[in-house]
Amino acid sequence: MATAMVVAGLGVAIFAVMVWYKAIYLDEQRTFWGGIDNALSVGTVTKSGSTNNANQNISQAQTLSFRGDVGVQNLITVASPDETEKIRVETQGYADADYFRYLELKLADQAQSDKAVDALNVWGVSDSAAGSNPQLLVESLVSSYVIYGNFGGQTKDNLKQILRDGVYNVDFATAIRTKSESGRPVYVYRVSVDMQKFSKLFAEYMRSLGNATLAGVVEAQSDSLSGVTKNVDLSIDARSRNIISIVDLQSGNNGDIYTAQGAFSNFSRPTDAIDFSELRARLDN
Image (cartoon, rainbow, N blue to C red; front, side, top):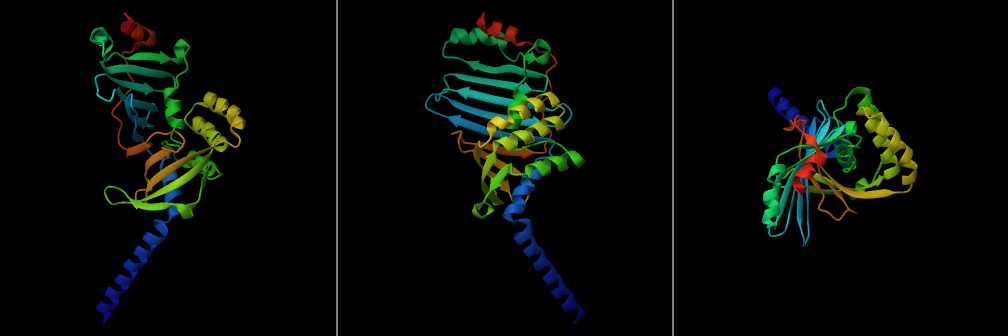
């Protein structure tokens, strides 16, 4: 009798856990905010995207790293549909400098391709010390409409509070439940982003990353975004709460696929760069 009662009790407990998991943990609203909150506590995040048309195919893989020297790496390929012309480049962006190098230059004019050999795998730098305004890092941080970082404590709590102040407008009743290629449950949300509120969030985000100057510039421009919205489709893995894709419905591209979150980055700031103008001169000569 006692054994039967224990077995029955275990059965009830397991059933209760399953009900909680399906009805509460996998709830549409909890999953959405779980994905948004998880993005605030990652060391790195990697995404990929592509745009193809009759004239060229463009693919890009981007990794943001929030460990130590906050930076972004972009690996970009631009090719003609038949690949008779192909350019591969790597860029890296930091708060104080942008870096650029050609990995491959295959041009229709073979003579031009031969001339470009001296420019291959050579880093060029454009930095604030030379009077330029580095933009690669900021562009990558703002382009996804989601705030990523490796925050904790009060800083994370402050950002979470701002995020819930009308930045995102979501009708959770219309969320689509589907499955990933590996069979995991995924929710797809149609999200309207209030760009004025997002800009104020982004200003606080920049302060949290130590860029108070840019925060002030963004904040000063926020009033001009009153009434401006962006519509995106946001897909979140219901189990891991990781964002797996973001599609800007007004951009016309295929959207960004998030392929890794929390993995270690394999790039570091170049130490042997020449001035970007010198790199361009090597191509022109």
